[in-house]
Image (tube, rainbow, N blue to C red; front, side, top):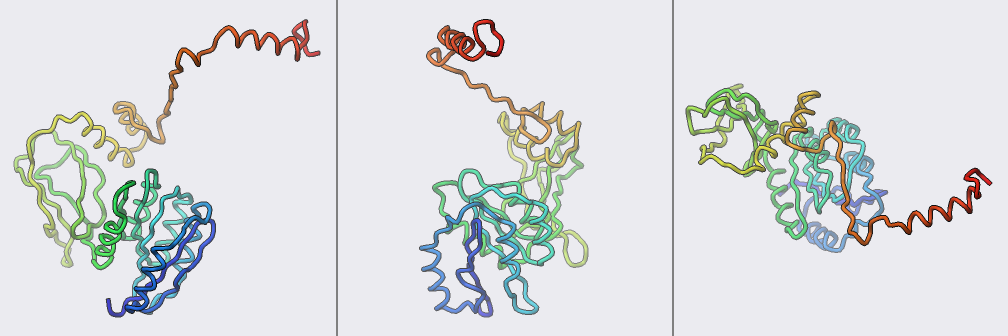
Length: 281
């Protein structure tokens, strides 16, 4: 758009600004397209904090807001430091996690803390489509202070995003003591007058008996709960969390199991190292 400025950086163990902030002309866009198509981000580990701090420090036109579109497939550390730096800079972070194991929790926290958004692209999905959706969000002012009107007071409710962008799908779970009196569920956002404006509406459908649905709901509730309630929920639904342990059992085949030969080897070791008396030689 006219008046936009754009930059491009790649990072790993270090940061390289491929293009510093400049006016977004047709010539620059063509150049950036060629650069993105040939970019190689294999630059060592994912030093996210340093990379974001350097990007936040790039000059922004006076009176304008800086937005960062970040694409990463790596693990991220220093979570609180990242969030603090992002908030202090005034930038919004729009994150795209790529691959089978991006740091989902960190990226979501970073995006939510800055008023941005987060999306994940699994292997085989088109990254370009996700980037286009993110650019659409960047152009918007999100609906703030989002709440859900269930038609009754729920016994519990999973976390609701602080804001929502047009075109997004919002997933929220709730537990009811009884079936709501109305089939309508409304998504509300705070308007400028401090009231609530409906931005979306859904309708209750037929009851679902999927066994996985309660576990998904429990997983969404877990980050909001403290011990011992969180521990009890995690144990009940067999969920991995900071409060539970995971024990993996590897079932060996008969051919790989310990045999008498192992004891023979142990006996030889005992004679050679400890001596025939069984005490150190």
